Length: 153
Length: 106
Image 1 (cartoon, helix red, strand yellow):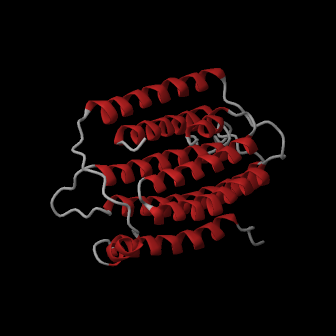
Image 2: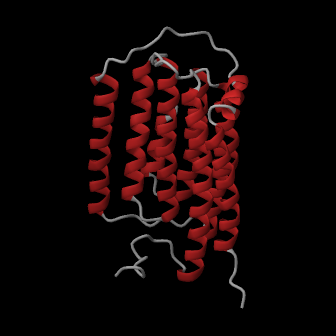
Image 3: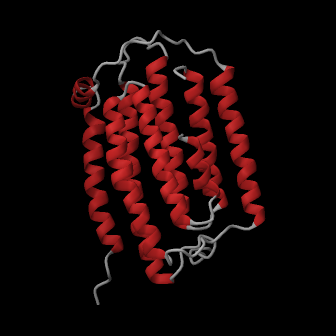
């Protein structure tokens, strides 16, 4: 469910198809968050990724090329090196994290709503990163407008 | 399904596909998609470890989800900035092929 569209993102020739496949990947990850008892994160994933970032990506695709023209492909050398690199990364990650370690796991606890705890944590223990993130968002807002606007003559 | 290694498997596949997308594509928007895949894989790892691994002393059970929230915030900010830069470059050079952006080469 989550992984198959990601293959389309990596290997599809048409960029619009890749963007729509990314939609299914994001929804699948939201479902996985649901399995992990992270209900607030699942909602956040759908709101921000599917509602925000994906729309931005589609705008980017449509702004910068003709709609159905095939995307520029890399040469054979770079795509082969990309696959080799990706394969090595996958083997490393999965062997080291998934099989190599014996993680000290706990029993499954029952799923309870996490919004209350997350809010408490954000405003107590993680207050500084929270404030820094808000300042960062303000800077990004101003900076994006400043970069993308037309130059004044 | 509800075991730690299955989530690790999914997130390592996603991370590898993100790297393949970043390296193998020349379109700047496609590279941005690869970055999003990588960030998603990292966030999924944080949440899975926070749920399944026994907590050290002084750690809160929801810390992994807090990290995932910050990753999502950073991903949103970064996507906006990169798209603004892409649009500025496209206006200037009429192309977003990352192999042709050589003006800053020394």
